[in-house]
Length: 96
Image (cartoon, rainbow, N blue to C red; front, side):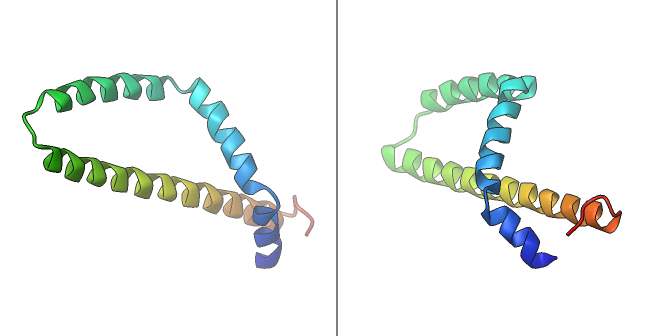
């Protein structure tokens, strides 16, 4: 069972995830609101009296947080797919 799930994931889950994520972003009104909030916060950030070194440190910190959040979302997505396959298999709806 685990091997089948791994093969399914290797066989194109990443492409499926990218396509699904793109479709969902296009439909997500909360995402659009967050973009506007981000632009507002970026303007406020640029108005702060910070040195270049301080801006780089803050920028690096934000990039690290975004990378960790993105990776967490991808892992959660794959875990959800694995759970769905297991559930369908255990219910007899998926023949493996």
